[in-house]
Length: 242
Image 1 (cartoon, rainbow, N blue to C red):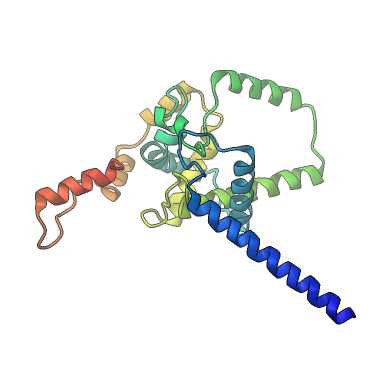
Image 2: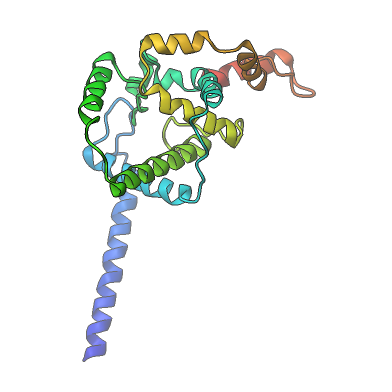
């Protein structure tokens, strides 16, 4: 009797799984799901994507060691990378970001603060000046910051599938990625004037070094046996996303 009941339960579970798999395949092939980027994702879609992405990145980044990111030279090197590779999507103080970034789903995070946000941040900091954190609170905050930096490093290095976030690990060393993150930590609190001053104070050597590492599209030599003009057109098309 018990064996018969167990067999019935197992059989029922198998049938349910087969039905669910069939419904899933039917949904995939039906074309009902709208993949248009012009349609904002639903709350359920955001929850599923954020949950999967968050746990995936956390698991793969947990063993990374965060270096000292306070060094001013590291911050300036990171500024060069950010200005050339990241600002178009994530923006800079006083200039915002490219118009197309607002139409992306998921939308790239905005790393700079508006003047109003900076004012509110300053007010909160002044209010918190007289409040001392306990040792446990300080440790929790530091641990959270380390976890966030490890995950940010992994994202920059490996990118995020099915989003507009590319993987920079093939063209940038780990140290260069940490430089970039050192600046990202600073850009949150920069005013437009402070950002312009930092850009104006960039040593020419840093700018030239980065340009040498990433030559403009079309500057590379044509592939052996290939047509130079065609290679240039292909390179131009790839760089523009066409």
